[in-house]
Length: 266
Image 1: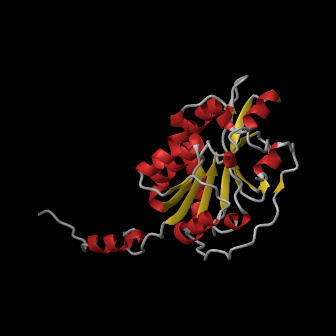
Image 2: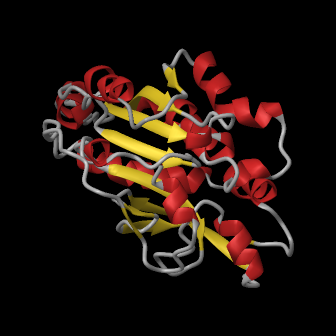
Image 3: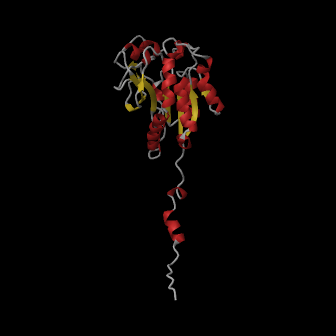
């Protein structure tokens, strides 16, 4: 006679013990993000936020972008003075409009944009990439998770501040660049270092437009990781927006200060 061993059924108990916590705990609210950017930089940051794996954790509330026909975006000293197409200028506003996002292409140092930013967008986080205007102090200080910029330069920080760092690096015979994310402050391209990307070879004689086309398409993982680290703070520390502050006079990074500093203060 065969002996059959039987054991108490525990399947339902096991399922109850090992159920994922996500079934019992609601996911954290999405972080409100505003983007200031144009051309390849603004496009790839937006693409990661809207279509990448971070999309489930953020809501893009608005996009401020360059209008290179306007002097306040400083097109004569930035990448726009190199050969480019109309499609290059419209890359960000077109993409943002296709995604149903509000787009602002005017001057940010106006009451119109202050009201839009603080009353409608109300971002907890701001990301800037290839943007031609200096951000007023009150807007820098508004997001509870801070205001960050992606800047191309060398391995040291601060590195090659100003509107055309690639031209300066080519003149200096640099062989590569990195993309650095740093906090935005009143010191242009001089805020606190956060992280840097892998090195990208810098060909002799290349200009900013050409280097943007090489650099940004390979920065998806870097953008993803940098934003993910910032969002980690959002999921543990949710605070109200800081009070509005009066903007003091602008200052600039002392390293390699040139004539561009005065132009950007406009």
